[in-house]
Image (cartoon, rainbow, N blue to C red):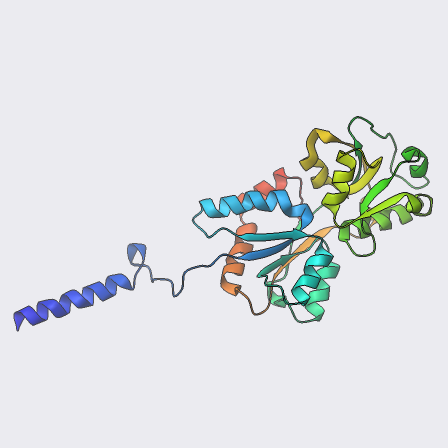
Amino acid sequence: MLKMLRVAAMGFAAALIASCGPAGAPKAVAAETAVTVFAASSLTDVLKQLGEEYVTAGRPAPVFNFAASSELARQIEQGARADVFISADEAWMDYLADKSLIDAASRKTLLTNTLVLVAPSDKPIAIELMAGMDLAGALKGGKLAMANPESVPAGKYGKQALEKLGAWSAVEASVVRTENVRAALRFVEAGEAAAGIVYATDARAAGASVSVSGTFPADSHTPITYPAAIIVGQNAGSAAQFLAFLESDGARAIFERAGFGFR
């Protein structure tokens, strides 16, 4: 009888230990799974760095898909598996919200950015970005690279700024429309465009390969913001944890070093 009681007690203790984590904390119901993040191409470098930090903290490595916000939103609309969407403008997040594809309660604005004109470092352009500027003359017959202004956020911001400053009609025929802002940056880095319109963070990431000619006035275009949200019906738990990580002090410091701002 005593032996049976001892066996029963040992079984109870084992069950109790199995139900608890370190220091007696309740054991998670299910292990955290990797989060799939669809993010604007301008976030490529900084999110890759943050992904490494996330792994260092003992979390599963995030799976990233970087492209123009317009392309990502359409992929999600067509059923591509994503847990988190981070757009480079509010419009494409609104697009998914209107289709009830995001968790509205999870939506938050993570970051801000600024818009700049860049040129190849060996052929800098001296121009003041203001109303009445002669950007067409400054190009000297060369091309102006920018993301597609009909759909891609960076291109839409750029067209707005050029229209506000009275320069769009003179340069429209010289514009090389690219699939995303990073592609526009590559045109300038390779010397295939006399100038390009990109985010300040892209110019910083390019380092010495480009020269910043100036920053477009903030009131010349819609404020540049990066909203993030969880996709409905996906890995909500892991997605929420990743978004919380992006708002942590450590993540904010990395965003700041990359040149992003906060609203």
